[in-house]
Structure formats: structure tokens, C-alpha cells
Image (cartoon, rainbow, N blue to C red):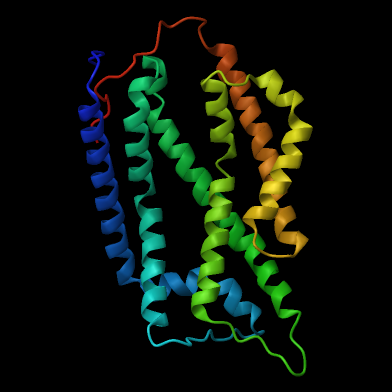
Length: 258
């Protein structure tokens, strides 16, 4: 790696290149997802459809363009998930020059762990929380009111929750990087667990745009466990880290070239 200082224009050019690669990866993923848009949409919104009746129900399209644009948004979401490893690789490759050489070698584990955590959180929400959430909404049906949900509104809510669970499950990575940056250490994180639990449940209430406590609880409890996992990882990392590896480079050309 060349550790010579680079001018601002070179950093901006590098950022533009990374953004272009990210956009291209997302576009390719979206094009692939569009081919199976109906199947992806049916899978994603299965909890809502099942909640409308024992044999499933049908969502409504109340605007002429609603079906097309909802399918387009669905393809964009699926394309983002398909391109997620590439997106994370580009982000890590851009920030890697500011790290120690040993830390730059963590790019592949970082991409893999971050992708698995995001997809795991989204899958957990889809399988464990969404059915309970939509069932909760149908309990307000009565003799004079029956649920007939718009596909666009249901997709918007599902996407919000899907991304919320995916992002929330990245908590161990956030804790790890706080320790990596020297902002906090593992003992301090462990002592602050009661405050972290309070903050986590506040965040869970914000991320889940539903009034039921079940979905908030089902998001908050895994986040607490993931926080403790992050504390454990931070302890292992800071305990094994060498006391001095030399000053971090101010800027440099990027090691990864992908």
C-alpha cells in the first residue's frame, strides 16, 4: 500500500468511483429481481395476506399505477439485498486507508458478518414478528368494518419493518467499531448495559411503527442479546490487540480493488 498523502480531488474521485460501482450493482440486482417481481412480492407480503383470512386474502390496488410502482419498489428492495455484499465491500474499501494494516485485513469477515446479520434480522422479523403484527391489526375488524388493505400501504409498512430489523441486527458491528475506534472499551460497555437496554427499547419503539408491544419486545430482546455479543467481541478484540502498531495513515490509495 502506498501511504503517501492524496489530494482532496483524488478522494472525491475515489468516492465517485465507489458510488458508481454501488449504483451499478444495485441496478443489476434490481433488473434480476424484476424478472421474479410477483414471486418476491408474494413471499414478502405473505404474513399480511395470511392475516386477512384463514385461507389468505387479497390486497387492494386503489390507484391505476399502484401495482406497477409497488412492484418496482419491491424489485428495488430485492435488488438492494442482492447487491448488499458489493455495497458493503465498496464502503469498507473506501474507509480502509484510515485503518491499521491488520485492521484492513478484516474486510472479508466484515462484509460477510454484516451481510449475514442484516439478512438474519430481516428474516427474523419476517417470520417471527410480521405475522403477529398483522394479526394484531385484524383484531380491530367488526361487523361493520372489515380489513381491506392497499398493496402499496402494506408494502410500505413491511419494507419499513424489514429494513428496521435488518439495521437493528447490525448492533454487534456498531459496538465492535466503537471499541475499534477507541471511543469506548469492553468494560465500559458492560457497565453501561442497563442504560443500553433502556436506549435499545426506545429505539425498538421508534423502529416499529406499530402500537403493539409484542413487535417492540420481539425487536428489543434480540437487540439486547446482540449488544452483549458485541461487547464480547469487543473484549476479545481489544484484549488481543497489540498496544502499538504505529500511527494510522492520514490517507492513502485503497488496498481492495473491487
